[in-house]
Image (tube, rainbow, N blue to C red):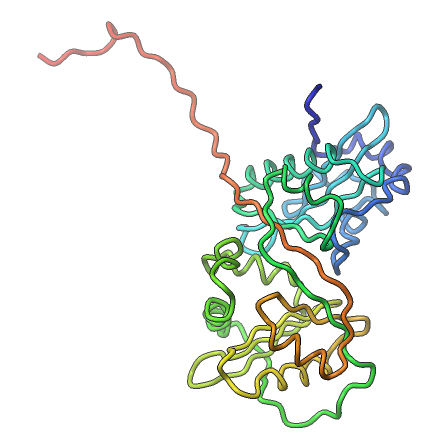
Length: 307
């Protein structure tokens, strides 16, 4: 059997791809705020004439004759250490070979652009998980989504303040204390890796709580999702975080909590937050592809010998 190979799209692919997008009806990646990046990348209005020059986005396709079996969109996260697969669409309900080929090509492309990790989110229990695993990605965390109650509580005193650039290191140190080592090992061992992770959250507003000169809690609000971190040992932080989420949650927004945030999950359920679903985070560590300089053999007789 011939090995399938997905390729980066070129401007010549635009006339064939655009009329077929409606046939790519199966989305492998869990829907997030960035799920329309395929259209934002230029396909909807201008074709793909500029895709080859987009420094932070890669679009790959797997062709089948004159048509497409699948399309993948991946984006570079802040700092360049991580790349996130934001859309992987298939022409069939299930096509393991296409999923594996597209993800393998995305990993190679991210490696060529000096990325260190490729991330992907898919629904828990996805029928595509074995194909994702064969592409070299490993699951390392589950995320639980909760919808806040319809009526937010009245705004009052809050220990949170808007975050500034000077809080970045403190938030990373909080992440190192609050998140289990097995997650950090896959996700963010360095502050540059953490920049990539927080970039994937698409935060538009951030808030922090200070305790004894350190950041004790953090909340990031995006267009559709809210991510939080908190010191487990600090009493009252869970309630303060949930108050903040209810007051500032965007319309159709959801609170995202990891498996390790059990106390917040229980507190949210007790306050009437509605479970929305569970998704799995996958990651693949990449090797940077640095081309070696060409080596030319030098005949021994041409070398000067020591006297």
